[in-house]
Structures are given as C-alpha cells and as structure tokens.
Amino acid sequence: MHTAWVHAKENMAKAQEEMSKHANRRQRAIDWDVGDRVYLSTKNLKNSRPSRKLGQQWVGPYTVVERIGHAFRLELPSGSQIHNVFSPDVLMKDPNNPLPGQDPPEPSSEVIDGVEEWEVEKILAVRVHRKQLQYRVSWVGYDLDPEWYPASNFMNSPQKLREFHTEYPDLPGPPHELLGGVTAGETGKKQNYDHGKTKRKKQSHCCLRL
Image (cartoon, rainbow, N blue to C red):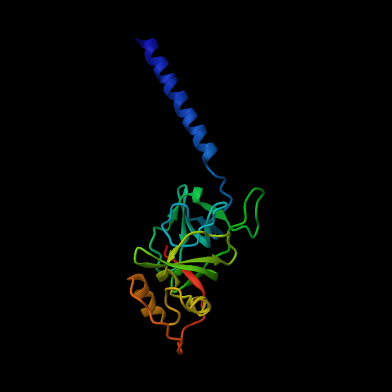
C-alpha cells in the first residue's frame, strides 16, 4: 500500500513538472516593464478594423502603467470599452528598439474621440447585402482585404465616399449626405444623389472601439 502511494506521488510530481515545462515553453519572453510602450494583439478583441491576412494583428503602442503579477495594465485611450489588464502573451514591445525575431507591427492606429481608427486608402466597391449597405476598401499600409464592412464604419470618411460615388454615381449608397445617406442605405431605402454642397471634415478612417 505504501509503495503504491509513493508511486502515485512520484507520477503526480512528474506530471506537474511536465505541465510547468510546457507552460514555460509557451510563455513569451517579457522584455518590457512599467513605462515602456507595447503593442496589443487584436486576436481576441471584437472589432471592425481592417483584417491583415498575413501575420498577427496589433494596435497601439500603449504605455505600461503597472505590473500585476504576471499581467500588465496598459494606458488605453479614453472611452475604451475593454479591461486594461493583459497577459504578456498578447503584448509585444514597441519595436522602435526591436529584438531579433520580432516582426514589426502593422501601421499604428490613430485615436479620434477615444476611438481607434485606421486610414482608408480607397473605396473599391459597394453592395447592399441583406438590406445593409457595405463597402470593400483598401487600407493604407495593409494587405489586400476582401472583407465587406458596414457603411456606418466610415462615418469619418466622407471624402473617400464622395470620391467613390462621384466616379460611380449609379451604384447604391450616399455620395454626399453621409449621415442621412448611410442610414438610408443600411435600411435598404433608395438614396437620391444630390451633388450639392456639404461640409465635412476631410478625414479618412475606420473605427475600432476597444
């Protein structure tokens, strides 16, 4: 009986040792500390940002403000809707001083009104899918993206919308009346093309709410 108990204890110790080794192999090397700037992986974040098909997706950089055990608290933009403490597995040091083997991140985002936004290079196509107006676009600094995004994502891109619909006036969607036109397009209503004056900021971004 005693021998069986000893064997069981030894087996348990071996199993724990193997689990520890496996965890250590998976754990990324931490080469940053409080005050450093890091990029955050978007792999597990719900967002409407452009999708990079090759390599991992990153946003930031953000400043590390606190270390909590093995996790890190980041200084996220005001209005962010996610918890600001992250595992090192989803963080990467700002490669202004890159280490060997670290891939450079995607083009960094811009914070507009507390929202992460990415620059639209050009609107490529439009469609009405299930009564929702959608666009396919190219993003500055990103690989070709085949995804379709709802028109409401482009509220800060009136100039790009205007350019596209001026070139293709017979396609569905709002050429100038952005706010009312987007709503009309997403509800499946027909939009009259009024080429009158409009006052909009010439911004070209798509939103990602963190």
